[in-house]
Length: 441
Image 1 (cartoon, one colour):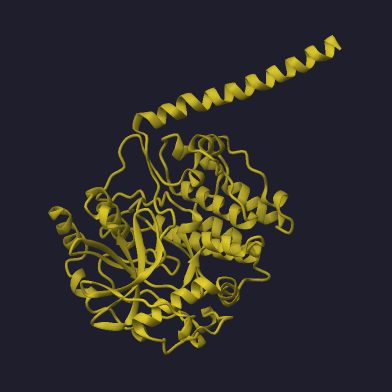
Image 2: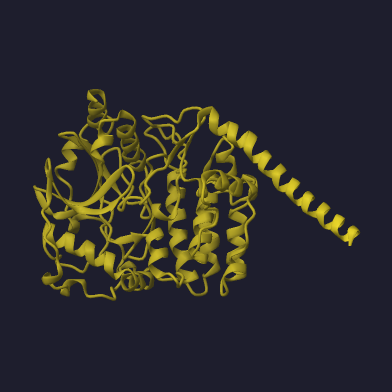
């Protein structure tokens, strides 16, 4: 753990720790144009104190943390402020205590900070650094009021998110992914980043109306402390591409495919490849038998369904070549009636009122009511250490790491063909039985 502590303090820009103690105030930041700020449908500033439950902030080093605003398998996420700057609000990811003693988990969180920090884009939330304080491992990020796309899909059920809004949110997330794919190191060489874990929980929808991609903890990149071993599979099976499950090389088109699965699910309001067990999910992903979203739900434009199906193609060469190409296709679809971020922000503040109220309560306990509406986004700071952008709300499942080594590949190589043979055999038996019955009859 001592070596990891040294990595935490030296893996970033040499003065990263110093810079974290002097983060610019909100008014010193780059802010978005006024048209990008969404009016809120709920007057959060008028919430009554009487409905609040008692909250005692937790102190970790120089930070005061709220109760968790999100929790997953690896970490919890808290709102936080620094003692020396109580006006600046952060989202702070804190590794679970039992995982903080495991080098591999610490390195995974460290990778999230170092990789995310190389990506500077409005559709990726800024990371300010990672630190270890008295055994607590923290990643400090910008706080952006909003909810995950996964939570939003559940929040609106049995209704669905308007197709125009889904297209706009996903176009933003795809632009963030493209920024990751194009990220360079200090020498100007490609970092070869592939997210590998694009899912509804890793896309954040802010009340500023923007979609942002989150969580680069298991991203493939040339600059990582933790390497993926042979036969090791990382991610969520239902959002993986066939080549990913088959142990073949992955590239940016793997993320395009995952984004297409998320787009399909957001439009339909139901899972695409999920199954009761992992083996069945693997078979479904590799078979890639997909129903057009317009065949499941009325009102989805045919052109939008075509974009989804192209991005879901089984062969990488049949998909969009880049995330940017797919984003531009989505944006062009509604070019005659473009979606304004303020529309999404106003709609979000109405349908996700409860989680936004809870964030407000926690925020108020830490820093008091804001002088400006909660709808004002916290933009990325103008100068950062050698690292910058990633996630506000933690993935509910967080990262699912499936280690199969030789066993997983054996399952794909053996059980998938056997399952196909079983289905074929059952079909032939049924046909033979039908013919025999007809002949006897």
